[in-house]
Length: 489
Image (cartoon, rainbow, N blue to C red):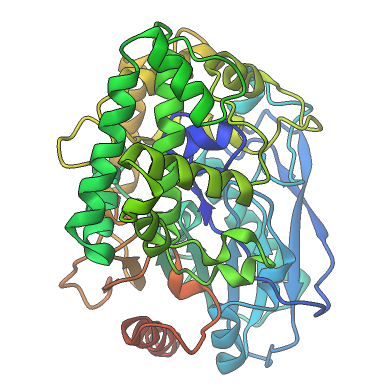
């Protein structure tokens, strides 16, 4: 789910520069010409926690009732930090489970993303209605309304599904509204909120080693050291401007521009690692489909391409082609200007303003280089991410505020001590977000499945022949747990 990269977190910055959707967002599979369920609309409360606030808005959802057997369960796919594609109503592993158990399937789009727009714009005043707590209350209200609308029999069991940030929501929905949802599948879910998420790049380091070995890692480190060396003088700035096809001339005295450039270069690796071999063919034929860690490492280990710096340039060229970019926009001011745009209809509305607001007010998860156990230099300190919160949303969003918000989130949901039953927590060893999740559990009512060799949300995509045996086994285990839990009162 990519989505989940950001202007304040590793993937988010590149995203804000035009390369990525939000950091945790999981890409929908592609199903060719299969008919898709139409969009439908539910009248939702603007504020579930203030009885004096009576405004409502229209929340988008989709339904697939083709597998439903009377008396069967209801499966709910939770939307996240991007549009809720109806493709998920006809494809994905959860649809296999729905066929197996005769489930009625819903997908509910997250407030403030896609076409589910509760307010006139995205002003800071209006964004106060954007939170995980409001989103969970949306799920509960929707579930209650659909139970009535479809005349579901008493005792109908609901099972929630989500990957990435929606994976967190799936677990938290079971925690906060256990009377509404009987069981939850929580995939690639960051459950520990943390301001300084330096572990993200540590897992990228691990993934490069695990997939391609020490040589590739060493060359990546050398390439970023070469960039650091060129940042020392004006001649080096000109070289970097030319080699990386920057949209404007680099001024190495502008620390924000330098950090933003380094964020984009690091994201050449982190974005590929996060979705490594995760069935990208189902994204609809994107050029990214066949770009993996091994693809990048083959370039980094090819001495015929030139120096390590030249090899990093070749990777940048490859990714610019994949994203159909003519130049690399690294301007901090340009990024901030786009994120300040409050118009839902603007081309700048990629979901980044909304998602980064959530990181500033709930989660943190700023992917920094404040660890020696990563190859990307030292130009992504925590203050760079904090400054973006201040510059986009206001002076009050400084680190003390964010730290307090992060602490409150962990207190509210329990972080890695998640006190919920009938929740299965699924993660992959290559996915950097597993560092914020639960990968071990001795509680049979809250099992953890850790899949060696897979990345972000791999178990949610449709199965294919080349899937790792551990991934196939994980899908089967999840299906068996759902069946077991559906038999419980």
